[in-house]
Image (cartoon, rainbow, N blue to C red):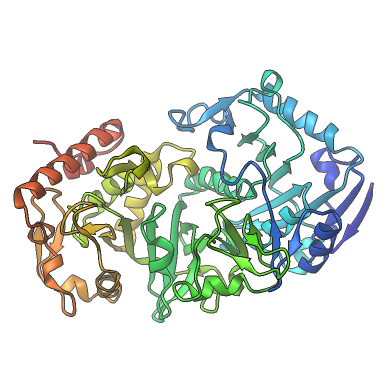
Length: 533
């Protein structure tokens, strides 16, 4: 085996059974990875400098192809209602076949950390076939100091071989694609897909499983922090404004996707961002747009003019889910440490297309747990179906696919941490007002930002509140600098009876969704739960 590259660890690939590989490239720098990716025909360079790649058939996560080894370690700790299982024997067969597949081949290794909190970080080794995958994960995770690389001892290993095809009969897969997770061995095997997001999410899965046992809360959220050290956590599903609202020029961005909350405060799991590129504009998102114009960014499935090498971010020919991976250092107001103090505010974002939730509501700790477990948002039904009725989405913990444990474990831990550190909790509706989708209008972002600013600076706690008759949470009666007409959603509807009917319908959806959690929560949360008439 020939080994080359920037700082080869004394703990070599023989630890992972890959001692018979051909050439192994260790911890290459971005320019070196560029050269290798271009020489192999894996990528192109856009005129502005980023590395441009295509992921083929897989342009997003293959959620149905993720399997967790069911063994003594995981039998009683995994939420098997939503997670698929495989046997230890099937995992071992896949691992052995991948090792055989790698014999004599070129591999790339990146030794990195998952987690900016040094007390809880996870030493992660990522072994890839594709050169650009190596740059992707270098951008997304946290690079060790030079002196940490020599003796880097991985606690967690990811092997990503897109050219290897899984065998359903031998490996228990659905087809040729498989993401196999073994929490006991702390290893993830990825085959049959070139979509790089699988590697990033594998780190999340491992941390989301391991940290709660240490009383550290993993959170699918963005985090920013003010000059006074007051951090804020933003939970929210896709389309709720999580990235947009946490990108505040007056506050420092800690991270945009996944964080932990430990005894030391909050910390980013990552050292980079993985942003959607489709329809990105310099006017709406100048800081993210700027990353598409510089060397080191990896752009997935972004269309480029073959002659001028100019990017067309509006062209979805290759994928609607076009993505860019870049280090946090590419964002001007990003945190240098990836850490911040204990959150002063917890914000849960929802885009309510039913048009019945207030623009902002204050939650008790038990209500916070209720809405955290519910993970509600609503999306507009597809026009191809000819349906104008909004469609409710409940994704528990605002990120069910990445939470291997039962949601109540995360909910209980979040509630305890909120109570311990005295965080204020808010539910913010970035969806519709004045009626449901098709009748009303999208909540004005100017008003949303003004309400958020009042919540973050503490002034919102000093206004008068009323209790919402449908949902039980507290709603501000008036807020300085905010159009008071939007604070009571019923008042914004021309047809009050239609509002009442719509609100009753949404409450019933919440009730039906929460039934599966009732046996797993305490009396306080059950008391905070909505009840149908």
